[in-house]
Image 1 (cartoon, rainbow, N blue to C red):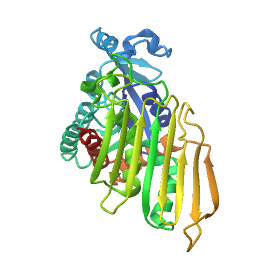
Image 2 (cartoon, rainbow, N blue to C red):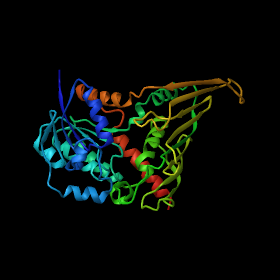
Image 3 (tube, rainbow, N blue to C red):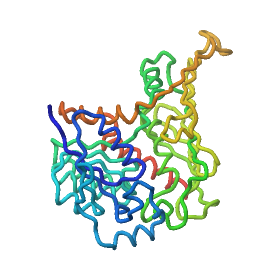
Image 4 (tube, rainbow, N blue to C red):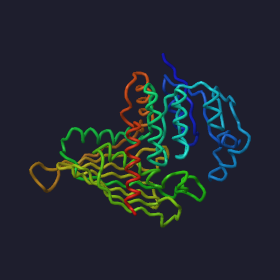
Length: 359
């Protein structure tokens, strides 16, 4: 049985969650993890990080490096360059801030490793274009981006309904995706455009935009309003946009850091029916239960429906299935179909089209 050596670079909430699901896969073995916060004993001991803002992390990175410490069979590093240069690995999982993710992805590919990188894939469209240039030099390697929402049960079911065309053409979609008080704080890298590239839309709304593209393709007309009026950072706290595709489908998004609750809701209207996705299963469970409402229009009538079907999803298999899919692409030398670099590039173009639409 093929066993791949895995390195995880970036060991915050997402990196640790990836580690859990990597350990469940029979073909994967984590050999090293890296995070600058390993310089702090409280972080190494599992008590969380006391270094939350950018200035503190910068100070940490200038301290003496903690390189190659072995704990329970895993090597721990505080500097990604030390990890990439000093151990053997087949796959690298990248869970880093936006300004570092493209650089580390390119280094790992150049070193002959397959790469799984979390979203956002970078700060700018150019970031992703540079990654793709490197990817194209190594055709045998697989690069996948973590657009995790495509693997949720409600999304998979909605996609099957859309592809079946039982409800006909999509007329419009409306998505709201927001956070509560978990917003960029002063001097935290997410609140600084030069490190993040954008605010709530790039950090979270990008998932909703990816689903728009997943369900109906690309958009060529965009009108938007992007605001940072509440938190007054140099990244947005609210983004509002209406988009139209070449075939006439209209999509609307509100990505917000001022909803004072975690919220995910996507409504899809068809010629012959309606879908509503609400809630999204997450580690924190803060978005509520995940459910899909299906409404079928009465045939040959413009009034009323045949009733409402509600499907509730109680288990989140998305993280496991996403990793399984990635490993299958490697083992069978298959093209990455979900979360490809092309997906990453096109959704980044959509994000920046929304930004540039608001003059």
